[in-house]
Amino acid sequence: MFGGTFDPVHLGHLRSAVELREALALDRVHMVPAHVPPHREAPGVSAEQRLAMLEAGIGDTPGLVADARELGRGGPSFSGATLASLRRDYGERARLVMSVGMDAFLKLHEWHEPQQVFELAHVVVIDRPGHRGTLPGPLARLVAGRDAADAEALFRRPAGGVLHLQLPSRMAISATGLRTRLAEGRSVRYLLPDAVEDYIRSGNLYR
Ligand code: ATP
Image (cartoon, rainbow, N blue to C red; front, side, top):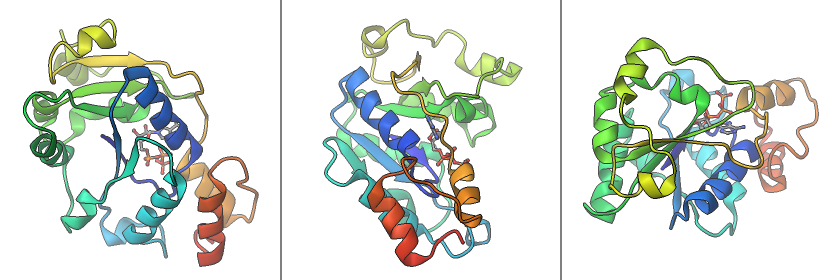
């Protein structure tokens, strides 16, 4: 599971998903757009449009799936509920992974019932340029004893471990930076897939 706001999806997300799948030999990477309360959405960009951009960006990429399960639920959804739903789909013995960028990992202890995440999945932390830091105390306690040395050690169990990965093509791209560029009428070429740029231009989004 690779969750995010994807507002909009960019090559930092998509390349990470491809390299994550390769590095861990995953069957599938479910990219799951988060429900965002309407008053917090980027003006004029709906959840359906974030999903459509994700679908356009993924295109025919093998193993990547645009997964609408959090949007279908209608209200805000917690990652625990999403992982529980994936666990129901894949069964008790499947090895499930929730991947997060380093910035998201550093706030994991602030999530709703973070302990539940480890009962359902492993957490794989992806290095992200410009985001590093020492673990806050509550996070250090949450992940104590969970570190796996490598993928083989991680996958001895179906859930509960933590693995840090440095993927080959780390990219300093953020959706915030893209929204600023688009609002200022600057180029976003080569930061997101052409199909996503076309969707943004034809819908006049983020202006
Ligand atoms: P924003 O700038 O709006 O906060 P974002 O670019 O961080 O957006 P999100 O949709 O919030 O994108 O991120 C979803 C997940 O993808 C998070 O776990 C985040 O850490 C990770 N991620 C985002 N950008 C990158 C990147 N360039 N490289 C690796 N991981 C990334």
